Image 1 (cartoon, rainbow, N blue to C red):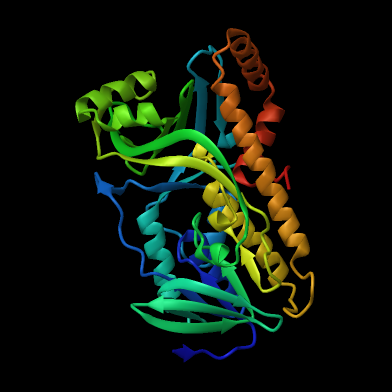
Image 2: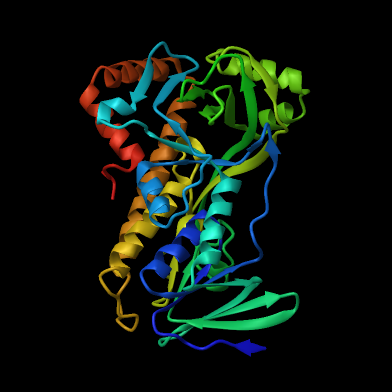
Amino acid sequence: MSRGGLATGSVIVAGGGPVGAATALSLAELGFTVTLVDRGRPQPGLAAFGMDVRNVALSPQSAALLQQVDAWPSQAAAYKKMRVWEERGTSQLEFDAASVGRSELGWLVEVAPLLERLWQALEAQPNVSLVFGSVVDVAPADTGVTLCIDNDGKINELQAQLLIACDGANSAVRQALNVLIRNWQTGQMAVTTVVRTERPHDDTAWQRFLLDGPLALLPSTNPHLCSIVWSQSEVQAGVRMGLADADFCAVLTRASEGCLGQIQEAAPRQAFPLNQQLAATANPHQRVLLLGDALRVVHPLAGLGVNLGFEDLQELLSVMARGVDFNLPGQWDKFARQRLLRSEIMLRSLKGLKELYGNDNPWVGWLRNSGVGWFGRRQWLQRRAIEEATGLRNFSS
């Protein structure tokens, strides 16, 4: 068993995904000595048509954060517009970056190139040490925190002044500290893949609200390739996962109303359950913080998950940059309160939106369609919605 020393301004970051890696890089640039812990270096995921099937939608605010730590991937695909319509409505919404004086609303970024770029930056950062292994225990104390890591049966103890958990929805740090979580079961699964379309996507994110769940066609750098995120019932997901490729393409063409013409080809599909959850606190101990999916998991309806994690990081940096006293009780109270409130609002909003569009009552449909039409005629309200969605302005924190 080895034991590390406690350094001045020392931080352990658990989890080397996008939020964890960006956290480690950002804190290292502020001068902190950072140890990043993960089970191993990120591995490429399922790929097709030269693309990673996994992707994330990044807001301008998140993009600026990644650019600041020199980790912006070259494969980022800007989208300039978003079109939203529903299965049983005649109205549609179109959001245009030009309406808020921007050239893009955001970017769709493949996960594998993003992680590769982040880890290249981590390996080049002298203030970051990489440690591989699984978290088996967390021992916070008044003077610091100890993290126990299992690496092929060898237990290492790492010590620092602060532990930041960015280790995902099944956070080992959160579990070791017995932090309670609330779960919202959605009864849905997401089917994801990459497809080749007859017509170009026109740098537009297309989203259709079906009664069974929203379908999103998200643009890539190739004008005829889109990532698909299709939320649907577990029963329907099982059926569609079992379809032959040609049949799946036909079903997807109908579900998208042929907005990009025929779906010509589809990559292998993946499916995963959609559940929302929220930890009881973002600051379970004076020496421990939860960020990203370790704090909350949201429905992919609005592509907000990783952006909320980067929001957590930005709020953290605003505190750290002013100087912190790790021995000061209540140092993180305001941060934790704000991040929990932000999470609550987003979780409830997404739950309400899903229920609204999933209601097949004709009167509800009429009211919903009328509301969409009313919203679409008010440019000032659309601008505010765009600013919220892109992180240019935050109305709910």
